Every structure is written in structure tokens, then in C-alpha cells.
Length: 399
Image (cartoon, rainbow, N blue to C red):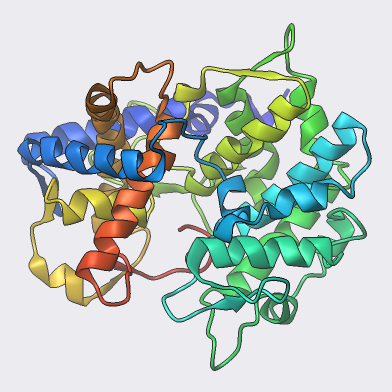
């Protein structure tokens, strides 16, 4: 019997649980019954206007790609992945495995970098920060065989140290990168988890997903569920139910159930970011990804900051802006749940302003076009360092 036969735990490892439970807390917010936040839905129209404006500025032809890590690899107009891919074998499956190796590592290293860190790329002389800097640094490390020769080896990942990452990310006392120890530990657990499952590299997940396709079609939710089931043990110190690590899953008393999942709300932010980022290598390998909108919006500080900065949500206590908050605090859990639900709510408003259908402009394009960039724009306009509106204590594995 599979350990995932425990229904309460298995249900939490799905995008449906993220959406359903976030909507429940959103409902409490609309009724004025959240502990930390109030909701002002009348501010959504102006927020949708801003997002639509940002989409048109970023993509005047409205041909928006999916929200994925691949966008960051092309920062500055340099298609770094295309250059690296040209050195790989012609076999489509081999290329897909290599793409999985790179993007899985890069996404797992993509937690918040802090506001001070910068990365200078030797090949271009460009300096990048935040997600783009982490993307370029991770790609350069991958190309230099830092994680294995021409690939990522599970055995090598078990030996990655914070010093290795500090060297690759150019981090040090004068260029601090938050969560280095947490990132290194995450890669070590990834290596051990893969080896325990008999997998020699992250790219082996391509074969596991390809085997689930029927008539060449693979549901997007299957990507996420597979990631959560195979990589669950990599997440540190999180909720465990029936012996199953639930990953990015937290507690809130407003989630009521008659089973062991009562009080639990999953977000699976990095895993969903990774699921979105695996769509393109799967499609390039000849698979057709269906049901992309089964995945949810990403509850991180750019999307969450958009709704906070636009006044759609407001903290009950203004003093929260002067403190640091743990990811498991009621304030942060409610903020993230509201973000997931509000992304679903704003998507049709943005489509209406752009004159596009849900089929032509799924949530993955709304995010990329879109809400993430609008959140960043507001952050730059309103805060000198361009940082998020709330300060979150990070161990390098959540945001």
C-alpha cells in the first residue's frame, strides 16, 4: 500500500487544496472575520487597471509567455539557456532531463535573496539582484559543472555546502545573501531524497512524468502532485501527517474539517513555481500540457505586495510594517491565502480589460504579464529599496 493512501494527507498535496482552503480564508476576510487583515474588494477595479496597464507595457502584442523560471534566464536580453542547450545532445529526452536538472535546482535556490545582495555576471559585465540574479548565478554554476558534469548528480547534491553556494553566488560579508545555509541544506536533502527513491538526478522526474501521459497529454496538476510526492522529504521542519511531509503547509484555526487535515492550509509556492517552470521542457519534448489553470497563483511577496500596496487588503494593526514575521504566523498565513484567492479574482478582470479569453490568457500568463511585475513596480515606487511591504523571516526555503 502506498503511504499516499492516507486520504487527508494526500488531499493536501494537490493544487485543489491550495485553492479551496485559500478561498475559505478569503471568505472569512470578506465577512470581516480574519484575525490580521481586512478586505476591501472595491479596490480590485483599480488594481486590475494597473495590472492590465503593466501587461500592455511589458507585452504590447499581448503575446505573454507562461510565468516560469526561464524568463529570468533571459534577463538583459541574453538567452542564456539557448546557448547552454546548444551544447547538449540532440536527443529530446536527454535535453528535457538536462532542463529539469537546471530548473529544479534554480527554482529551489530562488527563495528571497534579501535587499543587499548583487551578482555580477562575468560574461556580460551585468549586475543583477533578486530572482534574476539568483537565476543567472545558478545557471552559471550549472554550466560550470558545479552540480555534476553536464548535469545535476544526486550524489553531488548531498555534498553541496553553504560555502559552495556563497562562492557561486559571490556572497560574503560585503554582499550578504540571506538563507545560504537553508539553501545548501535544501539541495542536500534533494540529493538524499532522490537517491532514496533510486533516482540519480533531478532530471529523472522527466521520465516519471512522461510515463503518466496519455495520448501525449499530461495534466498540469499531475506535474505538481508528482513533485510534491517525490520531493516532499526535502522540506525542513514542516507539518507532517500520517508520516508524510506536507511541505509548504501551515496552520490556521479558520480551516475546519472533520478529519486530520483540520487547521491545515497548503500553499506549495516553490513547488508550483517549479511546476509552471517544467511545462516548457515537457512541451519541447513533445508532450501536451492540459488544464494549466488547475495550478494556483503564487503566494509570494510580489503578488501579495500588489494587493497590499493597492489597498485591497489592509492589516488590522499598522505596527506590522515595523516588525519581522515568521512564515507560520497568522499574519503571513492569512496574507498568502488572500493572495491566492485574489489572484483568481483578478484574472477575469484583467482579461476583460485586455479583451482576451481565459483560454488565450490563462492564470500563468496573468502572473507573468502581469501581477508579479505590477507588485514589483509598486514596491519600487513606494519603498527606497524596492523590497516587500512586509518583512518575513526567511530560511531560504519558503519565499
